Length: 475
Image 1 (cartoon, helix red, strand yellow):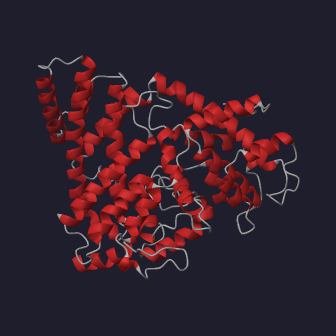
Image 2: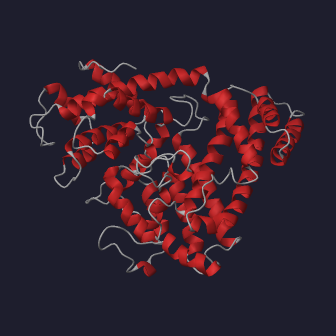
Image 3: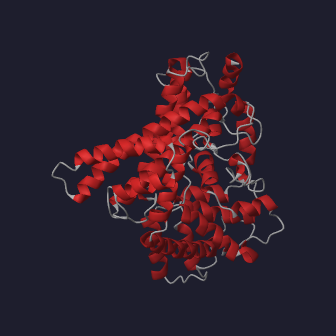
């Protein structure tokens, strides 16, 4: 079995790149492996820096201690790399590949850092706002015979995961159409949902959303062929990254909710114990955190300080327990993953499942549905819809329908069109773009909206109102 898995690992960790001429020659002279260089390429890209002003849970929050998409992504990358180190050094996965000791942790860090790059402003509510705009304007925007059902669904079910793949492979231009030209291994592991928008199946964990747009379907065929994965099969290390993402946002969103004063440390512990009263992992984590909380009470701490330090202790205990649990179940499940038979979220399949479920329930009740979050979500919906109205007007109001690069038909359209990022416009206007014109128009719209930060979206919305544009879509 180990020899069979090592054979798979050679394909799963394929360091080849898509750009012709960027093969493996000369790699032995490099201090970093190709997969290690992937992490650096992502880290230094502009979209990573933009995540500092993108919502994790609390949009437009003024507190430096509350997490953004950037801090969340660094935390996911750190957790994923830690699991990778354990897997290759302590669990001896891919033992027949000496380079795996460097490549597995590096690949997990890369996809952990990159996994949210395609998310639009205002968090997941931004995704919903984009999809809702297309639904509202479906008759005028998507009613085009050139669009296949899958092309239409790309927008009606807009997905930040699919935008991440597009961003790294198409929109981060160097001097060609290969984006950052990441390795086939990193691209395969990056795709959390290896399904197209017309292949969504809520009953399957790997297909409950879509992970690529029709514009990148040919790219996915290359990635699957290069890594030995069947079409629609998830890379094994993607399961680890997904689990680390779940752990990071569930545990750390709870910590942020306490920082925001939405509940206290004691409220959190009481909720978890009530939600999973008989679970040994929940009991162990809560007992350890509560004992240290009791010790902290002897110090001269303010209520805020006591909550803060107690949640830090809880965070350490909870993450430690969950990380240990996913490491165990990954090793057990690897043969099924190799055959494409594994269809459960990694944490849910582990003994840490009840703890994670209780944390999610706590966050949903006390953080995600809090009135302060809902109020700013409404602001985000208004802003995104107004911007989409403006950009759609500018994208489509041109002199020649079949020439995307033709001059805009009005001064206002020309002004707004020039506010779209140049590299996005270049992809849209390229004669080599094979997608139908209407698809390209809609995709330029989503490319621009997804690339914005929260504060830039708000300021641009105000700018367009100042120059005379009035949104038409009703929230």
